[in-house]
Image 1 (spheres, helix red, strand yellow):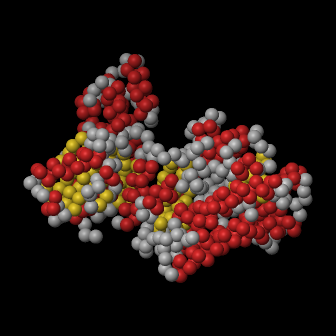
Image 2: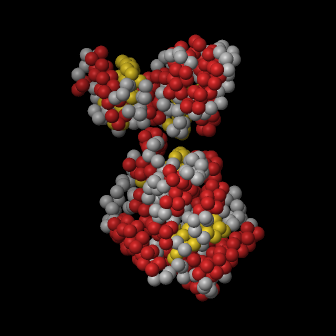
Length: 256
Length: 382
């Protein structure tokens, strides 16, 4: 049985094809751009082409992510919370908690030994502590978000107090005017992001082995800072960004 | 599948706006209130019409923010906005306003609102248990009674109070019976219809007519139950909605829950079941009986507020709920802080999934709330 999970995030659209919900056949990623519908269709087509398959060979297509409703060809729509649970469980079966920081939201999910969601929390409607926050701040520092980790000071960070992305940007500009180094500010931004998600996690408990996912989890120094704050190091996988799509493909293989 | 009578219930909105005007023209007095701590029976005993005032819509909030801080609960801003823009017919026809010192936001807003119309503010104790608090609250009842007697140049007798209590209890009982119909699995009424019927009772100018409509709605709905009819199935997740009050214009989260496939079977909030749980004791001295009933309201402005936990436990069991959703208005400190202990109780003692949603009256976060609600329902369904 072949299933495809498509996760349309605010920044990137991910697709994963699986066999019987147990083995990953293909992973694919593309920028979401302005049209979630178009990127969803494109990623679907590309996965089929990559494997030389006809649509009819795929048993189920499951959509997830913020753009999920745009996937009118999907057999089922499931939220990214449920899919992240299943995806993290697939990649690391001992996972009990997931921290996910994506482009426009951050969430903490607790799951059971079967990967089912027990409890979850999402940030409120503000962008603080999300990928968007780091992107705006990187712009203020005139670097690309992918360079933020390398730029950041290894030891000292300037404290960023503002919770709001707009005010934090003014704060960063003021700090630069005061002569603070870009490296200190960059580290401060990563520390601020880590603090915010730790508070969110504290509300429902960062229990057992904690899996770190979402686009923002690709920033090495942020992972190091979070590891320092936690008693046990975070679990990270090369495929972290795909857990939503993996989870969706697993949901598709479920008999029901 | 929806009872035909719901049309008549919905029409009450227009009907009552006309009725309050007619009553006013005949010389009847109107007492405008905001909260279920307001003892409507004392106003009724004064021969006046007690009505709930508007405060559930987004529209007047912008004007309210000219005087009130942005970071304030939308219910308070909306209530004040309706008053300053004079867009609520019930406010317009009110002779006097009755308010209570419930939360900080409300009591300070009332100082501004009192500049628009004569307002009596009852000093509500912050603790509901203890004899001294009841004595204090009884005295507040006497002061309000005196205020109405002076304002309307009338005498509120014990007989009139007793008659008002009987009528108030009859209304409460019929609303309670209606709410309890949704104990059946699957529930015969959508949460939206239940909310509308319960919320509209606050505007009932003619209480007898209102009671009669709800009795007919109950008969029709009971018929649906007997025939096994429901807009839901036995597998539809059954949700208990607790937290802040909602009405037409502020039902966003209830709508999202039901659009996403849930059946909201119980409304613990003060526009729903909270005020219906306990009747006024008809055998006691009326002022004491009224004071006891209203002081027992399990609102988050009380400390401690154990009554809410007790009520949630009963509702969760009686309505066979699958999950609890706690709705909090932004900047409502009392409900927001209390949510922590409510969540702990629901998850650990009732062993039910729980989620809190903090929002305002605007539609800006609809998409985000939808994700949370859908994920919550997926969590319930496994």
